Image (cartoon, rainbow, N blue to C red; front, side):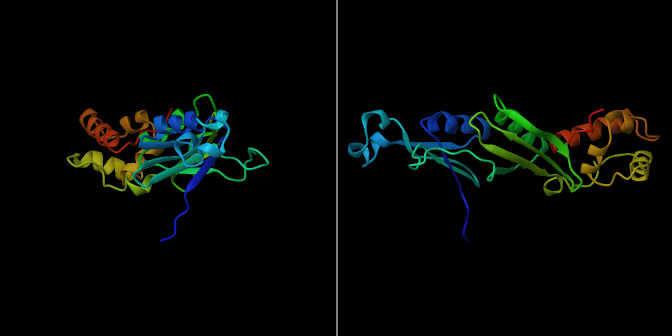
Length: 202
């Protein structure tokens, strides 16, 4: 299958940027300088430590970069954005906070009408990111097992049928449902934490 892979261009700070992305996204980082390549004798001394090719890989994630720019120099724009699909709510919140560090949180994470957690940012190197977590991809499990019938009926009446439904309510709103006692709430919170789901912020 043909695949599109992001290739970022920098001007002397590729090593710094790719190391930053590794800190945010994990994975293995490979860096090749111009001085380590067959191009070394064709380039001026000042460019020997520039990065000819960088590759960050982590599972399906692949991010490439280089300090090699064209004759017109490095031109930043907003026509292309990096889309990061995350696998849990905890992951998207962590990645968003890390990538936005010393950058600009242009679109804070929020729940969307299509059932996802979504946000955007510009990182400290001027690259634009969109982060997305489709709640249904890992969180369609049924309600926690072992709940008493009164608690099940209370949740059903409130329209809570799968784990992601809890994200529409605050913890207080769940705790005051008739039939949801302390033990039921403890079980619910434990299962939500295991699946990276949280209650709505008051």
